[in-house]
Each structure stands twice: as C-alpha cells, then as structure tokens.
Amino acid sequence: MPTREPHLPERHLTENAAPAPPWRDRRGQEFAAIRRRRRHALATARSAVVSLLLGGLTSVLPTHARAQDTAALWQALRGGGHVALMRHALAPGTGDPADFSLDDCATQRNLSDGGRRQAVRIGESFRRNGIERARVFSSQWCRCRETARLIDLGTVAPLPALNSFFQQWEHRDSRTQALRQWLATQDLSTPMVLVTHQVNITALTGRGAASGEIVVVAVGDGGVEALGGIKPD
Image (cartoon, rainbow, N blue to C red):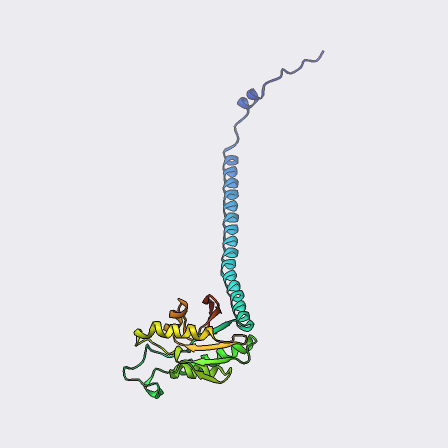
C-alpha cells in the first residue's frame, strides 16, 4: 500500500519556502515604482486637459452671453419704445476750455481723427443691425453734433436738454428733468438716437458710458430704464 505524503498547512509551507533572490525583490520594486510614475503622469495629464477645457469654456461662455445680450439690445431698438442714448465718439481730454463758446467749435474739445472714424463705424453698426434711418437729436456741443452727423442715420436736430452740465453742475437736475419730460412726449414707434455726454447719461440712467457707447433705454409710463450698453467696435 503506497505511503501518502502528510498534508502540510499553508503556513508551514510558507515559512519553510526558500527566500526570493535579492535581484527579484529589486526588480519588483523597480516595476512598482514605474507603475506609480505612470499613474502620476496620467493623473497629471487628465488634470491638465480638464483645466484647459474648463478654462476654454469660461472664456467662451461669457463672450457668447455678451453677444446674445447685444443682439437683444439691437432688437429692442428696432422694436420701438426704446431710444439709443449715445455718448459722443472719442474726444481726448476732459471738459472744455474755460472760455469755450457753443458757437465756435475751435474753442471746444472736439473729436479726434480716431473719434471720427469711430463715429462712422457706429453708424455702420446701426445699419448692419437693421436700422437704416432714425430720428437723430444731439447736444449743441460740436463733438456731439459731429458724431451725430457722421453716424449718418438722418437729419440732426439740436436738443438743449442733451447739453452738458459738466462745468455747470447747478443745471444737472433741471436738464435731466427736461429730458425726461421731453421723452415722455415722443412717438417712439421708430428708432431714435440721442447723442449726448457721459454726465447726462449717468444723471438719467445711473450708469456711465464709454466714448461711442450706446445705452439702450426703455421709455414708458413708469419713466426710463437703462437695459444695457452696446460698446463700439
């Protein structure tokens, strides 16, 4: 009858197994280190891709939102019940000389050549967005009258309620009220453009405007409300 080998527990086998050669331990450690480096490299690459994608989205989405807002503002101007309250184009400096005269443009701060080109581009923006003609009113200051003429949307009529009070702050409230009252009497079924100054825009709407910026204002029974601004190209 054959003799059977006695069954040895796993623990016994393990304890009595021959130790692995030193070179095998070193190689295993090297492979483990390589795997760790690969995992770290992959994780770093994934993080970089995610950051790039998110960064791209955050830069694109606001631009897309701005484009949508601008399109809605142009639509409001085409639809009636709104006015384009526009600051004159680029005119370097601040205010006017102390002895300026409304009857003499040479005594005033006037548009630069860049401002004149800007005014022409603004007129092109109106036409590109479906507004070929408009009722155009302007402050009596030369830089406003020239801006209104260069946008080329219609005959320019002077409107004293749009005149600057930058150097005559005592006229701020009366001039702003005069503009509110005038707007309340107007037929806004067709586009209207008012070319004026930054101080007048702020007094009426509570917001500022860059040179050449168009602030779109809704006019209704409750008064006026600025919906937003269209920056010049």
